[in-house]
Image 1 (cartoon, rainbow, N blue to C red):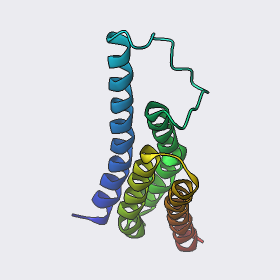
Image 2 (image 1 turned 45 degrees about the vertical axis):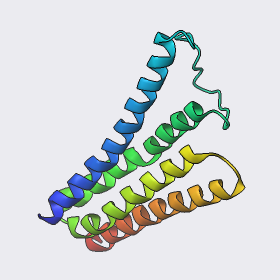
Image 3 (image 1 turned 180 degrees about the horizontal axis):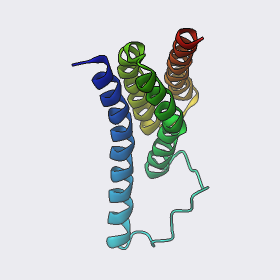
Length: 140
């Protein structure tokens, strides 16, 4: 597998994780509405109750989107410019950190879990910064 393929597949895996969270959220909400346990308009977008697993799932999904646009641009530029080697090395770790962050978010919310979750987010941001710096060094 080439560096280009691995970088692209890792980006696809990241998006796939977001899609999996979305499908889980849609299924859970749909079952609640169909079973009569909730009305279709019972899921306000800005309400967050950390004690509710469905709210945590919704936030885990939304948090996955926070880096997606940036990743598309950075990995896309690395592929376009022919610098996919580092993207191929870093992206699988970034995807793993995102999945870990989401799973910790789904576990619950307390001081320690938030610190662990933030640590996984920090790893993702640091990896993107490394990738951007690598591209800039190569180009400049």
